[in-house]
Amino acid sequence: MITHGEDLLVAGAWILGFGSLVDAIGQTRQTFTSSDLGKDLIIKGNGIEAFGNSLQAIGRTKLLKPESGLAELYTIFGAWLEAAGNTTNAVGVSMELNVSEEEGTKVDTLGSGVQGLGAAFEAVGAFLLEDSSFRALAITGNSFISFGSFLGAIGNIFVLNDKSVIGEQILLVGSWIQTIGSFILIWAITLEVEPELLSKIENDTLSPYSYRTLKYSYVI
Image 1 (spheres, rainbow, N blue to C red):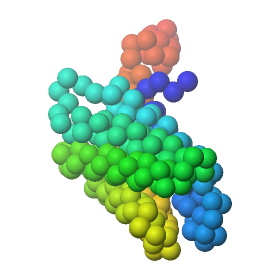
Image 2 (image 1 turned 180 degrees about the vertical axis):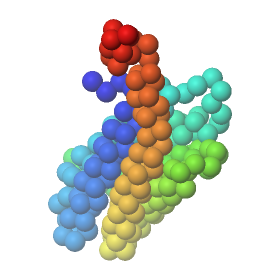
Image 3 (image 1 turned 180 degrees about the horizontal axis):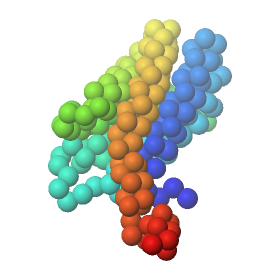
Image 4 (image 1 turned 135 degrees about the horizontal axis):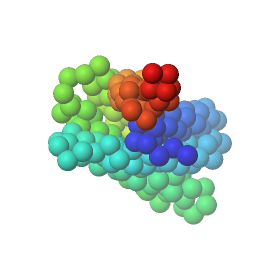
């Protein structure tokens, strides 16, 4: 079972990347067929993304320390906002299929805006961090996700104003920009947690109760 903060961050990043890819594939099908084909994938993709965001928020909360500053708080808050936004997206697209296309698109637009805001908070959180090997990547990845999400909201506004062709094109571009950002984040989070994991391994190795130490003491 994944319980450590670092493990949750990495798992959440990969799940987020996979979900964004599923979402982008669904949006591609919808755009090129000018139909509801692909909406089922969009719903699933957003649900997967919401789960990934939640894991990241929980992981960062587990790693939160008393001396942690605004950077970590911004990042945690942003991750929860993204989870809420993606969940709203999934509900909105489901409403488009089963209730009312117009009402569903409005809910989807709201979800994209919330997701974009959440990613922006995460980008600001990364900006406030001390300079590190992953800081620039975290800023870039979250900025891509934020920009792509806001493009999704703009695309839906065009659709609501009977400009479906350009709206769908904007939605398509936005979905793939989010996917690129998500995979940049995988790289950033991997660089972020590597030192922590190495430190834990070294501490376990040097622990007086470790296998190596006990074996050495026995030989002496």
